[in-house]
Image 1 (cartoon, rainbow, N blue to C red):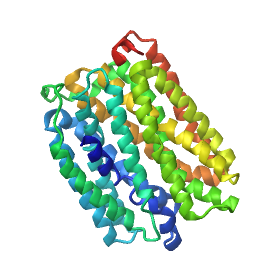
Image 2 (cartoon, one colour; image 1 turned 90 degrees about the horizontal axis):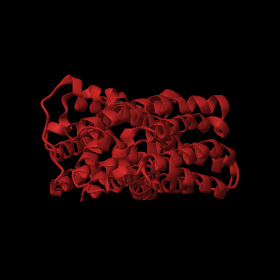
Image 3 (cartoon, helix red, strand yellow; image 1 turned 90 degrees about the vertical axis):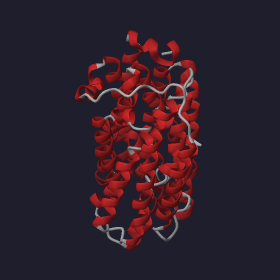
Length: 387
């Protein structure tokens, strides 16, 4: 039921981005405004997670109540979008509110999953990230010539998530809430192993959401250049590329519990970084080639995501787990603000052939961080000794 709630709630993330090409056909959008339709959510998430981390809300309030309240508010904000034109400032405000609410859904969902872990934390969080991936891809399925359809569908879906989470129980690994201390939020930096795992995550995040945000525009432009595919097929291919990450998250979680967290994250980032470079060379070429590289990228780009969260959960003190997970995601999404906003300018300067190569920097640096973590004695805490 937790997985169902996660999938349903995360559909709000790209509710407007899925219709960006439809919106651009009827309204003029500057490069900045176009990116902000996604970045408003990212910014809201950053603010929401920072507030949550400072107040240690995930460690002090019933996780299910945080999830339900956040999902309900996000649903109302998303449904309210249809009353405004997509270029309206109010839409950006509502997207910001939605992002802030997601701070009570995504990291909180991972914290709930960790209460049930018995040697399979990587798989459990991998399932949650797989749900996040499917939820994020879902708006592309319902994208039509009416830009409001994904918003209505996502809003209704998130209302169901608010109800579904009420039927989720907490596992036996529930930790006692600590007394609030400002110093708690600094543990992510003071703990060397946690800090290094976070650096790996930051490299991963530089790539992930910028890829998800702009791969649809790339596919549409590539197919148009090849003059072989329709906009509808481009939408379905975008869903397939992003949605394939659900398989990556699940398999990555399963393998990480057996091969080790640093091994899986390093391999995944190397593959995704190479795909970020290679995908540009498929622009205007055979759509089959674009789809092949795109799906491989879609699988690899998210296969490691859950393992950064699992690593932090295993490396930090249990009572601070919710706060550390929230702080990690907050800083990671702060980085996405830069990479998402940079992509349209990269396209304008060097074209689609090279634009995604900028994203490869993140996973390559992230790999270095995770290999450093692998050499630390603290890495023995990962996956029951499997580094």
